[in-house]
Image (tube, rainbow, N blue to C red; front, side, top):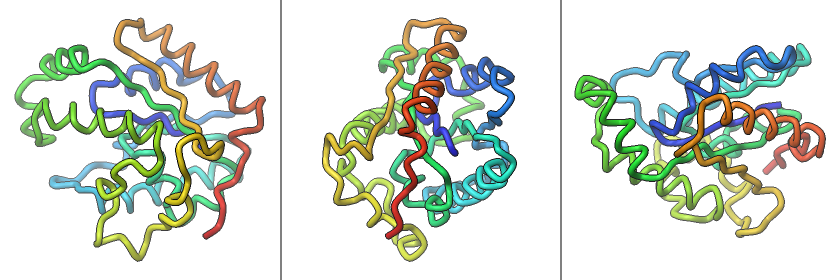
Length: 208
């Protein structure tokens, strides 16, 4: 199965992934950007890269191993990824922090980081705000992630009629604003254990 750990830049994903890595013998831990992010990477590129990661998760699944993936991929995008229906299960956790914390973390990255990735602090704050709404409300401004270039490839109909409170749309939210990395790693580990033991993560993505 695939455990998605998503969030806007400076949420703490990389630090948490590094802290969780090695805690489970049957859990592979990867950062989405390991596959290489080309200059000018956009939403359609991310959609197609999502499929590459689902394919890797399926290879791990065949070996009896789950995948914890740190990414900026929203939960709905992964649900709509073509091969997601082949996963034994898919579950998501949003790492988030308040705007002041994110702004300070981004500022410490320096101007060169912004030059490489594009955008400015406000753009990352806006993306974080959208993700907060997305985690709680499936139909929140879906047009932000739906793109004409990949409309024929993605399977949005799997979930775009779901409403707030639908049990199939369950996203854990962990606030990273004032916690140490070790505490956050513990929280993510608890989430993984709970999802495994409850069977919720074993719910397959419905075919549509």
